Image (cartoon, rainbow, N blue to C red; front, side):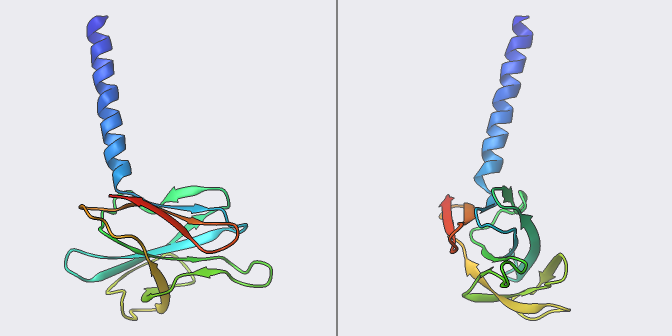
Length: 151
């Protein structure tokens, strides 16, 4: 019984370490806005080219990681709602990247118009001091964004 308990304890410790390390490098989007927000991100790849991807649907009151496999030093993001109270809310400015507004997309060389994309503004996220950023971007009920991060 003691052997089983020690193996169980060891397995739990490994799971905790793996969970902590995977949580370390995550980009999470939270929605407090009164409408569903669709999120796209862009980030630089190892060869220096840009990749843009979208759309992650984030319902009001929910938080979701964009993709747990992304490990980058910084990222850009764009948020959009569908028409809400006769208008569309948009978050994103500063640098343009290719998006496809009709469906999910993934564009390489995204800092220029490629394939059927259109260039739209994205907001820069925080910079990591270490190897990769762990950040939570929140779309508050009153508008704007709030970003928390750690290295």
